[in-house]
Image (cartoon, rainbow, N blue to C red; front, side, top):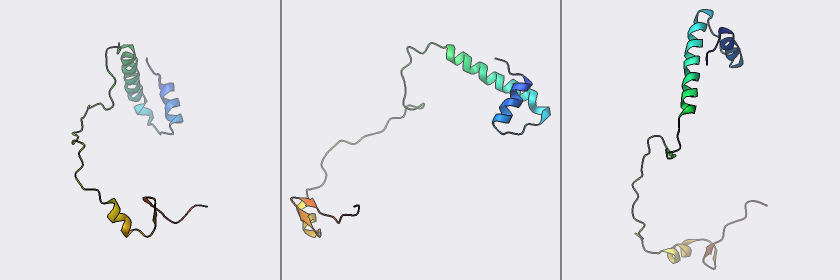
Length: 95
């Protein structure tokens, strides 16, 4: 896809970018090259390509899910101002 100088001027106006008149031809060439690349990428068959969540495909080391502390719930509830049926009671802040 080839962009003309008028196309570049319209794009610059829409983007509110000031372009020097001497640079319009190089912008037209560069933008046309980018659009050609997009067309080429759109024509590729990607049926066998698995989707990725991240382009670098990192992996996170996970630790095993093991209990490392003893249950201290009863101790903490004795320190709380108000509890009921094993729950912490807090003041109402939204009417």
